[in-house]
Image (cartoon, rainbow, N blue to C red; front, side):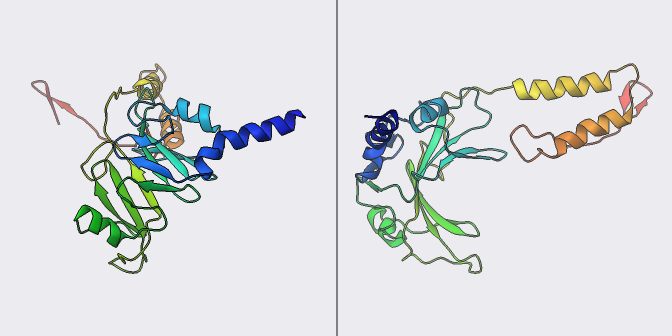
Length: 234
């Protein structure tokens, strides 16, 4: 048996639980028979299991690791020093259902309302979602319409650990202040230089302008203070 054959067999064994069955989603926790647990496991644990074939999406308040080939997305808080997994989203080709019978890509938003005895969705331009304790259900909507079709099938389900609007919890959160310190020290070094010049300051601000919408983004804000008599500042 060749080394390549062994690798293929190991790959199949590793991912068989995902593709060979419909996985049960557990609100506030994760996915049955998958060891990643919300508010406990880290993104390093995820990469150790699923590898590095993911798409990284970094925004101001969230960072997503999206494994498109298996239909799993793991979200972390970009300011969390420990990079703990805060939510898990499932989409096709992943097969999933909830314990009360909502099936990914089969059940509709109307089914969600009936099962949870609830009505109403939050909306964005392209999708609508209904949030229950520890779990949220998403359907697509026409960006040209204000409303949405409750007969639309659930295309994404997100598991989190907070019942308020599907916002992820901050359990075991530890703020990582190192990136902030690094930028501030660089800025202070420019401002305190004996031969201060505006070109160097503008260069620093321009360099950081590119990433101001990303985590730890540095936004340019200018203010002028004038010292006047009696220790007052205008």
